[in-house]
Amino acid sequence: MKGRGYLTPAELFFVRNHTSTPAIDVDDWRLRIHGDGVDHDVFLSYDDLRRLPQETIVRALECAGNGRSVFADQHGEELDETPWKLGAIGVAEWGGVRLSRVLDVAGLKPSARDVMPVGLDDLEVRRPLPRAKATAPDTLLALDMNGEPLLADHGFPCRVVASGWAAVASIKWVGSIEVSCRTLLSPWNTDTYVLKGPGFEDDNPHGGSVITMQKVKSALELPWPARLPQGEHVVSGRAWSGEGSIAWVEWSDGGPWQRATLIEPNLPAAWVRFQFVWRARAGEHEVRTRAGDDSGAVQGDHIGWNELGYLYDAVAPHPISVEAVCGGGVCVSQSRE
Ligand SMILES: Nc1nc2c(c(=O)[nH]1)N[C@H]1C(S)=C(S)[C@@H](COP(=O)(O)O)O[C@H]1N2
Ligand SMILES: [Mo]
Picture 1: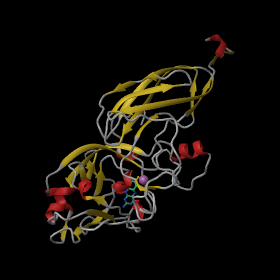
Picture 2: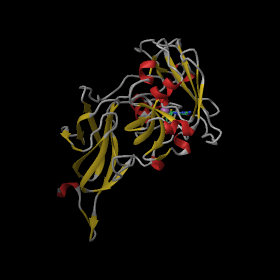
Picture 3: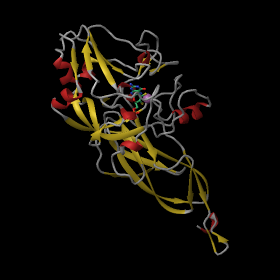
Picture 4: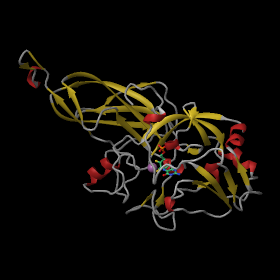
């Protein structure tokens, strides 16, 4: 994303599929809304959705497993799930219809409790949203990403965008939505996408604590590990926080924490770009960043263990090896600084 502007281009946006991307013929596709939480079943076509009032919102989507490999390293463990560094996040402008409007077409009952969008991929990936989240003004059934129809990998013809929540709640390739007056469960809010381990409250019948909101995080826009020539560098990065916005970012190469400069825009539930000047001396370094958001949440140095390695929000030591610059047969070494 370095130098790429504020929004993540659709073709560079991370892709996370539990199975493969389904091929959907939009002319045959219908969105079915059903269950005891609505007055009647409805089937909506793509054109029906396009005819409902459209909105656009700029929002981040981040996988709950983002940072897992840093988490595993800090705990000295190996984890089987996807070993993300910090790239499983992107920010896009999403266009589409509020999910609440679509539910209203079917007559959402006051007694409705849970809303479960179901994907058309072969595992039927699905995850229930409590009514309050499903009907929040910024929960969208998105048709467009950055002004263009969704790409197949990102959920064409339509996907949920559940702002601020782990992106598993943002179901792609939605084919049906079940609305129920009872609690709905799926493997993706019982077996996985749940914090399991010592110290987690059990708020789910299978144990553990169901993941909803994302945390405060920051990352450098550098390869992992990075190599840089010795000298002054403008180092850039991005920081983000669930539904909040970022108040400040600091960095350190082992010395005292120093403020980084934030670069507008700084939208809530999206991210902010930051930069700082680093005088890189030859040798092996770890550069750390930490951010704080408008609710007062701050990135710490460490997080406790959870079995599936979710929601790593502690500081990530970014390995950078700095090479001495040689000219005319003379290498400028650290002592010449
Ligand atoms: N139908 C369906 N929706 C899905 C998934 C999936 O496998 N199938 N993966 C989820 C997960 S775990 C994430 S992180 C996001 C990734 O969205 P993206 O691939 O557009 O970045 O989609 C979510 N929605
Ligand atoms: Mo994910």
